[in-house]
Image 1 (cartoon, rainbow, N blue to C red):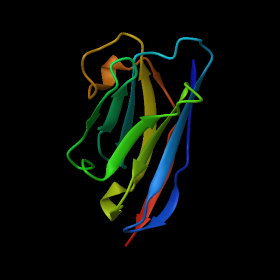
Image 2: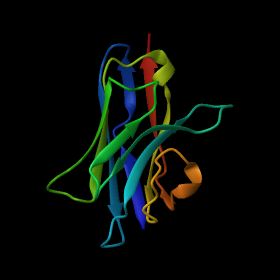
Image 3: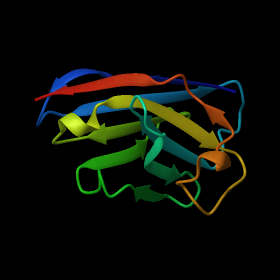
Length: 125
């Protein structure tokens, strides 16, 4: 299974960005997709997650209300993370990950089986 995250870049504060994550290498794309982010010197933190089969989502407090995780209805193996009203503190490398164990949670790194390589998001003030 390979995950490819892309869509990062340099954005001004207040702007928006949509990150994409594509899954390949396996017909079944898993149960949960999560987005995490990491800045130098800090642990990776959960941002958002979506359960494909239940259609449920979960967001970190830091992005709740200005972020949307979704799935491409045509390309079932592609998911998106839209973040609006970007802040300088959103600057990080963003990673997508997929969980094949149908966990009831979203936020635990260890529940995810495969990870993408990360895409850099930089928000300028």
